[in-house]
Length: 214
Ligand code: GRF
Image (cartoon, rainbow, N blue to C red; front, side, top):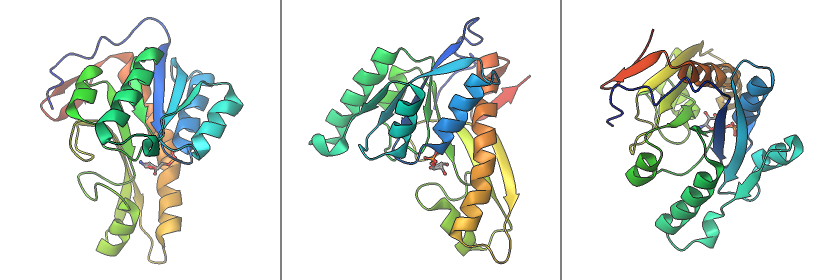
């Protein structure tokens, strides 16, 4: 990924327009929205896009009066045509930052370039360990003693862009997938707003894979 050394023009001097892409429950979206409402993040969620019409996140958006858009993967013959539609919808929202929050699709290099690399994701593991699906289960199976979450810039790889924020949680001997996921999720809800706040304040740069705040 070549984000260069610039900081994408942040700070903006006005509330940032955040767009959220999700496929399911939407608890990270809700945490981001709450942080905007509480003033921790100087921004506003201007729209939510889901590839899944049943996503809980869509109901949360509707309840909060945030514009919601379903771009159903099943209605598109190819990945490309689906992505084009998502791109079109996102463009109409004029986002300053795009937050993937449980969005279950890989984005193409073209898509990421279309938004000049201003796409973030949250993943429930200490990357680069356990990218992809079922990260918490893989961590348990591997027998790690620390698990956690990572907020990172998105590149065309799988959970592989520069890391912005990471937090760890202990793994207990009696953990199962659910208990570990819950412990990690609590951190996710703190870390995603923290990472967005950090990015919006503009005091950072990326060198190679390294996100450096100052
Ligand atoms: C979170 O664990 C996130 O890290 C992962 O997908 C899950 C989404 O949960 N990418 P929610 O929809 O935000 O509640």
